[in-house]
Amino acid sequence: MSQSFSFGFGSDDIEENGDEMADVGPLPLHDTRENKPVAVTEPKLHKLQDLLSALPSKISYRTVQIRSPAGILNVPRRELFDIRAQLMAEDEISDQSSPVLGLSTDDITPNVYEGGFKTWECAVDLAGHLFGSLSKGWELGGRDVHVVEVGAGTALPILVFFDFFLKQLSPSWRAVHLSVADYNLSVLANATLPNLLLTWYFVQSPAIPEPAGDLEITPDLLSRFVKDLSDKVIHISGISGTWNEAFTDLLVPVEDPQRRSRIETIFLASETIYSPNSIHAFTQVLLKALKSAEETHGHGRALVAAKKIYFGVGGGVDEFLKVLNELGGKGATAWESKDEGVGRVIVEVQSAGGNAAKRCEAQRSLFVEMAVEELDDTLSF
Image (cartoon, rainbow, N blue to C red; front, side):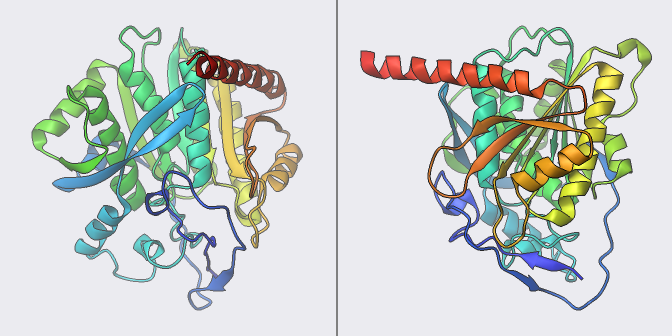
């Protein structure tokens, strides 16, 4: 049976609730269909050109402010109403398996729609954490870099990396690989890829774009986008489908032995552990991909952002850490919210033998230093 989850926000998406999301309330579950098996979408790799072909002639956007002690980064994101309008115009609501159903009623319907059109609170947390780390000199040099976001959706965390890579005039790495994964191909084509294009447009635009507006998608714009990525040696690909062994193989493909130990792989995920039914599969995929990256390339790390508990469902950080330990992994807190309401955490994950705790302590020290600098600047003013 497939059940749909409604997360109990007054407004689920940050687009409709300001720059910050409301705390999670009780999470009611209710059936949305008869007792019929739902076909699981098998993993599939998608090239950039294939995703670009789904873009409309114009997209509407609004910037999201990513905050950290290092400052504020304005990240553009396609408007939810614009996504809804495109999907309905394309008449994709052909049956109850269409992910567009999630835009009007439920937040999540497992194996149908996994919430990727909306931007969730912990994605903003992770984006801010990454922005602060990159601003203060996250060590990425000396090798190729592969950033993977699992359950990407609107992809704010990987957009922070993309913005950073685009702005480097003399990078120390040879190439960058960005892999965005979401259960729904429709999410990759209508939310994830447009946001990557918008981020590139904001970086390369000679004038500061408006915080909200429309972007005309012309053949010339797409040609410049593809050429600029090629010039900067940035590769983008998408992965759709369920979390299984085939999915893991797509996350970390086998490389030429001559290139081994030269790629730093960074896995990102947010709001992916809301349900006990999916925690085991997600954790298994993450640990296997992490281990594969470490064995093949010598360097791997993973950051998972989540709420401490998802009321009414049973998922959360404690359950995730329990499964993580059972599968031989380790987790250490890299960041924790201090505000009221449901607690939120960013966990750094390591496979057996990793050193997550030591790195997280270094990250915490870095953020203390950044907070002190911010306070000094305020007092000086």
